[in-house]
Length: 87
Image (cartoon, rainbow, N blue to C red):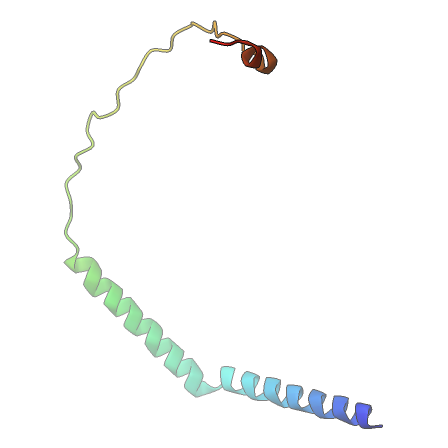
């Protein structure tokens, strides 16, 4: 009996919590505050973007193309042979 009563109390507390959270989230004051904060952020971004200096590009002709060589003759190494050698 006590166990069922405890579960009932827990479920009531959780449901009340969710009710108040949803109520606050969908309230007009929360919507107004969030809209105001978004507007303030947009204004700040615009102000800072106008103050940013524009840098000139210094990356002209820095890429050097190298021709690919066709020397695909690579020495094949075997692990055990490397261990056997005493060089």
